[in-house]
Amino acid sequence: MSFIKKYIGNLYLTTRFYLATGLCIVLFIVSFFYKPIAQFPKIFLAITAALVLIDYVFLFVISKSPAAKRLMADRLSNGDENKIELQVTNRMPFTVVMEIIDELPVQFQKRDWIITHRFAANEQKNIIYKLRPVNRGEYNFGNIILYVQSQLGLIMRRHDMDATVTVPVYPSFLQLRKYELLSQTTIQTEHGNKRMRKIGHSMEFEQIKEYVRGDDIRTINWKATARKGSIMVNNYTDEKSQQVYCIIDKGRLMKMPFNELTLLDYAINSTLVLSNVCLQKQDRVGVLTFSNKMGSLIAADKKPVQRENILQLLYNQDTAFLESDYEMLYLQIRSRIKHRSLLVLYTNFESLSGLRRQLNYLRSIARHHLLMVVFFENTELKQLTHLDANNVEEVYIKTIAEKFEFEKRLIVKELQNHGILAVLTSPEQLTVNAVNKYLELKARQAI
Image (spheres, rainbow, N blue to C red):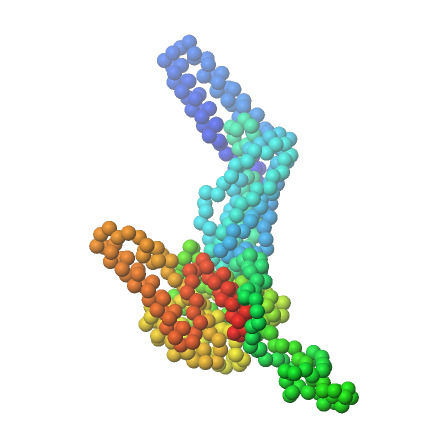
């Protein structure tokens, strides 16, 4: 059975073979009516058969199997272009043409991925292409299939290269490098004296120094003063490390898709980048998820391993088609987050009435923490507001779109009126707007 599969099952006929065979048939038909060329079709058929036999010997008898392998990262980044590299080697002593098929995961729904390359004798090529996954989870890559044909091009042989592998797709970790430089920037102010409010100081001792006017007299070190003969005070390091929690709503409104990614995916990618920026700023960062019930929680910390812990947590998060319970969220925050923190809430409100149903809980949270609500504008509706209306139906559609867009701005005003920070952003600009707002709050020492 393996003999038949090797020498017959992997044999495929090319377009050139069918053209040659069709030409033979035409010549036989013409020779039936025109006798002087009766021998010519037979000669052409014999030459074609001989060439097919020679081609078969080249590909199945004296040839060596080509080599191919797939080079890629251990994990892919969701929503980004990920580089995939195929290393293909022609181990035959003559030039061949290869049709290369890489069996991509079913999530991409690509059934026509095929490329053709010409390889010289014993030549190796690295073929690079990119994939953009739009869902987190496991992606199963299949085999690499090579269809090899010689320069005669009458038949070709199939080679299956075992390259099956399962690769996890994580939240967009490629954006970490993109926004790393942004986190190092500071908001520039005009030259001159500016009074900065101190956050306070920790109990971490730094040094003993002589008293100067303006020092806190409560920090006088009396023992050192007695030994030195002059007033000495204890100096403590300023507390710069603050707590930041990214809270992700996994309710039904976060299932809404934009540019193939759901709002939840945009929120997860932004959380990963913002967490990395907070860690670079020496802040303690944590993550909390919720929907109709409590989700996952990572307590705030600034250890280097925290970035990987957050990445692993966000990997398996998914939306639920249920209403989010903000009362439960308030109770969990009160019981689990004891210190005043910056809470970045990724959620979505489509109407002012939807906000008002949850506003009391948001106000209660804002009494104990600095709350920043990040929600999304509907970019498709926004595009409708800029279209020209040519009939009554288009006027109606445009009016409704303007109403919804105006209501989004009212939501921002309503939150601000109750002392809650609000960021209304398009999904594509979510990460940069969230990072910029955090850097602004950090520069103002609001946290």
